Length: 275
Image 1 (spheres, helix red, strand yellow):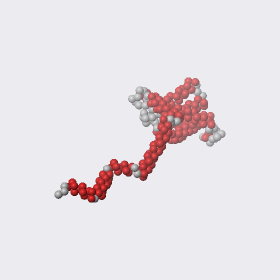
Image 2 (image 1 turned 90 degrees about the vertical axis):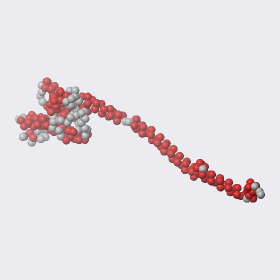
Image 3 (image 1 turned 90 degrees about the horizontal axis):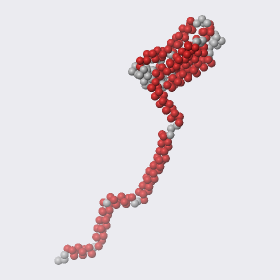
Image 4 (image 1 turned 180 degrees about the vertical axis):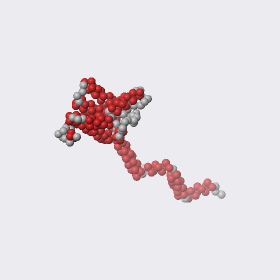
């Protein structure tokens, strides 16, 4: 009886194709079950190489665009305009100086005990007392020269209210945060800070009085000091910033020049001088 090994060898010799088929089947199963070989095979394909090249090129182009855009954005942030730097610096100095000078803004401030006195100065520069006093003087005046001066002062006070209200409504700058809204007889536009109406009125009225009234030297000095103290009290009470007062003082001087140009006389308005 022949041994099994001899019979297996005889069968293999008789059918050599069985061995080849078995080896090819084993090779295909091994290659299909190996993910690494599948990935290598897929990566070696021309289509995959083309897709990977396109994705790599698009990514590199996006990175180049970002690198080209970033320096421009950095330049915009790190190199602002000179005007912007100047305005920001001026605003910072204005806020700091206004808060430093606002020593009477509250009762607990460093000069809080002087707050009632500063409020009296505030009322002395208010528009309502000045308009009421001018109307009374116009009613009591019995000379054409005096009526002409008082009438133009009334016109200047009314013009001041209109112009300051227009500028405040356009700019709409809020009052300082340390301000306490306890002012005398305020209107809707008085919630805004720029410019200071008291400063415009003080500058305009003082210049008007110095040029159209015959005053002694001590009285002229008092008028100038009154205009300065009224303007300074606006910052000390925390009502306005420094730039509000400075612009208001300048605006008051310009308003007086406008009144001189639009001066009302008996020849221009004769009906008013016959009353």
